[in-house]
Length: 449
Image (cartoon, rainbow, N blue to C red; front, side, top):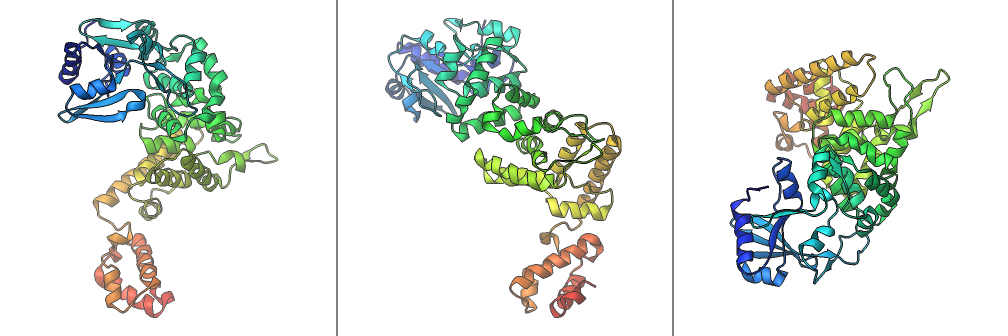
């Protein structure tokens, strides 16, 4: 097999070989090239030590010296070079440490997680596949290198990575690897929240986010997100649903576009249903207030995994408002946009559409038409430039200050004016708004009449 190496990658390998060292591309870039996928990174493994790499290349960055990794800069591009290694003692929650003086490439490939990531290549030696990675790519399976139990003891995060690769590639998990994952899932308690977050996000953004359900089957969600397990145990006995809360969630995940915020909101949109479920005497389930409760739980989960504040706020807001059902009326749509936010409103509609895809056929077409009509009205409102936020008003705080209005009353008047304009867009005229402000200032009750 011949892999066409990028010019700068070939340059690095050639330079190292000229100096008497071995060097190969390794891991994901080899796998992705074989699968006709565009490699995101070109990682290189070499017999050269970090200090030797730094002496050979002019521009380097010490990105992981304790793991034997140096980043080489060539032009605007950067490439990670890592010295051959086998796994040393593992510190709970961290990546395996570097053991120096390994015998070479064979030991390096033995330390890798899965066979499909344990292949190396250079132009001189061709493809090096010591663990059946090519065969597993053809069989479309994720299988551990060597003994699965050893691989998962070296780094417990690999139990989550296995499902992530399965979701990204559309592969199955090999049987022995599957059973070993189930027996090592509890070790994820030792892994840092940041590392878990990175893997679960990649899984959710993958072409197969519904494989989140395999995390439940393997006992992984019981460790990292027990709230989802309760969803899988919560029935929905009502005309709108065929599935329990967790099964419905997996269908919603598979129906929504690959976007970080959307997929997280889809995962968490009904997370509040289990604690509020009420089963009435007629045999029907009710979930009153699940949106508010879900927003509280979603915030706890987002903070547990240390998501950034912006992502957290968007996801929590979508969970809180996902049950809002504005009719195809311009006034209702404007009010919904005001509540949810102009930037987030398209995501709100996408979440509602996907939510309906995971329900029964009862009134589903009717609600899908409503969502489509609301989306069309939203676009019309944007094209017309109608006021949807305080900043869209044709007066501002400076105008009110010039009228002698100050303090909290400025915000009160602007919000009251916005409420009027959202209902009647034609009122967004400077003279009308100034008159409204004067009346509100003199008599708040009069201003709204």
